View 1: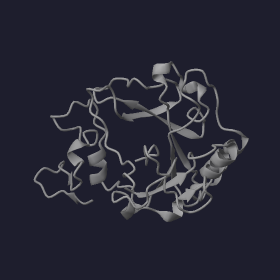
View 2: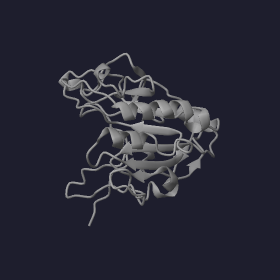
View 3: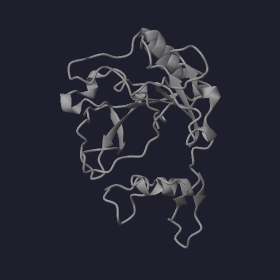
Length: 246
């Protein structure tokens, strides 16, 4: 994907990504967009903040390393299959393709949700190559049923502490956590020991109109909010999903 800034307008940036026009949340400064906040993404890119040399890994159910949208920036060194105990984090394919890639800097993934998610699995995933991986991104936790109060076990807690103290060559690993999807069930992210941990950065969501999505969980641990999908009449965000197999 390449950018084109050859325009008399210094604020104009265009990528040859066929989905670029659908990424309203990036170029929401346009008058045609309804989003209410300018996150200054394009301005940051123009100033040189591109994420170059930053290594991000997604802790989820795998990453399709050969996907044409990902393979150019796929980083084998920051990827692992904790469920299968090997170096290939490719998700398991089934008839419904229920395993989805999470959404470039160097992109990598840890396959760890596609099996029994134990304290050992979580701790191993949180502690993979802490001197090489800068950011660990996770969107999982206790059941979002409005009834469950849970959090990391002793080994995962230890992994968080080790990452914060020694990761990123002493600067501290960055653990980014989604605040949860249990809003409709009356769930509260203060009952989620991952998102309210002092070691994680908790990120919430807003619709393009600045409203709370139906799935939003509210709690004081939320550090920042970004655009995401909302009601059926709201525009969605663009992501990468598993290709059909077979």
